[in-house]
Length: 99
Image (cartoon, rainbow, N blue to C red):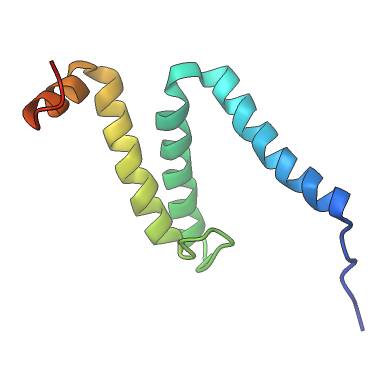
């Protein structure tokens, strides 16, 4: 019988820290483009994983197609805001929150 080794608290914390290290590295390299770049890549890679046979993930949304749709939507909105920075101000103004 194969048993999986139990991780120590330090190992679990290091695992979480490593995830934030990856996020910080992308943010450092991409700067203001972090959200659109990361969400675009997430959408594309989860969709590719689905087409290659992966039907579930460890992500909270569970299914690659659902995750891809979510991050694809975030990506499109983020790119629109990057390309045309006046849109957020116009949206706020339209609901009475902007100047």
